[in-house]
Amino acid sequence: MKSNKRERWIVVGVGAAFVVALLTLSNIYNPSPKLTTPEQDAQLLAFKAETIRTEIDLRNLEKLAYEYEIAYKHSYNGAKALYFKSLVEPIIIAAGDRREEIRREEDYLAGEVNKFKSTLNDVDEAWRMPLGTTEEGVAIIVANDEQVAKLVAEIEALELRKQELAAAAWSGASGKLDESCLKEIGKVEDSIVECNAKIKEVEHKSNIVKLAYRLQRGEELERPQLVEECCDCCCEDVE
Amino acid sequence: MKRLFIVLVAALACAGCASKGEHIVLSDQNPVNEAYNKSGELAYKVVEAQNYEEFKRARTEIERYEEAFRTQIGGEAYLIFLEECNYIFEEL
Image 1 (cartoon, chains in turn yellow, green):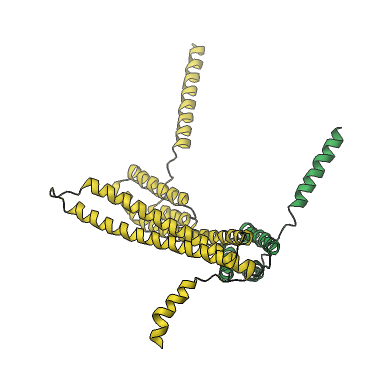
Image 2: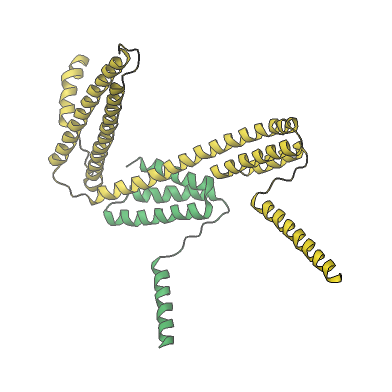
């Protein structure tokens, strides 16, 4: 009789310990925020919002605000949850704006770092570049300019083609946009982007050559044609 | 043998540290002022280098300071250092 009673107590004790352990574990893995009042909880989120620096911080704040809202909904009612949401929403919006400002600052800083490093690399390349005669340098610049002019003409032709394709896509008899035309427009746009990238690359090469002549020899590479063209067109008019 | 090995490792470590050159320590008293002064001084060395050797020395120095401003000071002073350097580099 006595041992039966002891067994029963042991079973009850083990059961209670199991329930406590289960509750503890569920609280650890799925913690619900401790609610005070909507005003105090909103204040807490406002303090947290002031420390936001990264995108993850912002996401965590939004998640926490959502968890509070759900907790208010479950513990009290929808009206209290809505009231809490109305208090927190401006805080989240302000935190988002602040994060956006920080992102812009980060982008600007990254741009400055990139400019600093690329300039040093360019100057390094210019100092190490083997140079020919001045005429050879000018010839490189002229050839690069001609390549750029060709690429610009190609872009103009591609822009025209894009306009034609756009007109053809809209003027379909079925009243729907022509899928094949749209695909073609996509290809043309890719080609334009490619041409622009090539132009930048060629211009960059020209700048390095000019820099190399300036640094190593103190010479400014000028296109002789430009001087002649200038004399032909404007100098006579001025006279 | 074991002692010899320890001495060798210590010597290698010392040599490694020495090869990195002296460590730049920036004062945090007036970092913005320091950024203006150092950027002007170092960027002009890069711009006014007369040959590749001079440029290499100036580049190493300015990159070490850039690293020091980034790791030790950061924030506004680091940005000022970069902006001033980039502004002076435009003279090239």
